[in-house]
Image 1: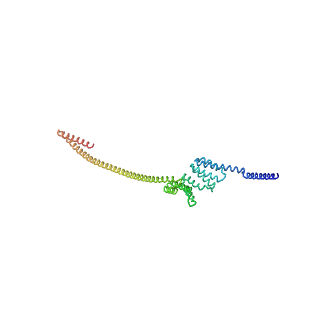
Image 2: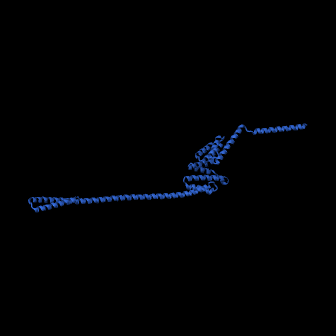
Image 3: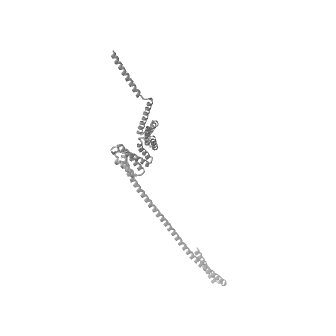
Length: 332
């Protein structure tokens, strides 16, 4: 009997110790109320981040910005706020809100200067600058981004870094293309097609090279057309100049001929007038001579009243009248 009691006592002691140990472990594992609230907020912010990224990947950029703005306001630390700003800037960039995207990129750099996303952010900042026409600044950022992609073991770039570098070269070429520097742009596109055949930008680079070749042909045709047009304008101007000179010469000749004709007619009229004046003077002298003869005849008639004298007188009158008529007709 005593042995049984002893065995039972030992069993109770062991059971008590086990229950105490379990209670202690449960007490140590149970979180405080503040810890439970912090864990709940962390789950909520992580859920917002996941939701925002999913909305971005589905092309719902404005909805993604709204969700990520809530995350930015609720995030407990700068790392999570920086992550929210990163995806907000990408969503705005995809939505075409380039100025807003640049502002949020600046905010990310100010919020978390040591954020691991800043290296990748330089590439996206360059794209935003490209879309608003700040090509020189964008080219600098793309070069910095491409230079930052260093080879790893064996001095070989990883497949992902090759794609990133090809993308930086592609957007550099796009900037040069937009600036009209077709030859330099073609060098970058050709670099992608030759050295990065597996890049997602390979097909786009091939297309751009074809466009550059076509653009060069168009520019040559436009230059040829412009030169032909300028030559036509010069030829037309020369023709108009010669035509104007011809018209002026013709007008001068016509004026000179008119003056010459006018001078010839005046001279003829003056000569005719002089001749008529001479005839008129001669007629006047003839009239005076006849008048004298008439007076003499009249005097003779007074002295001699015979018939013969009268007939002679009549004859003289008739001659005088005929002479006067002739003078009047010549005067007309």
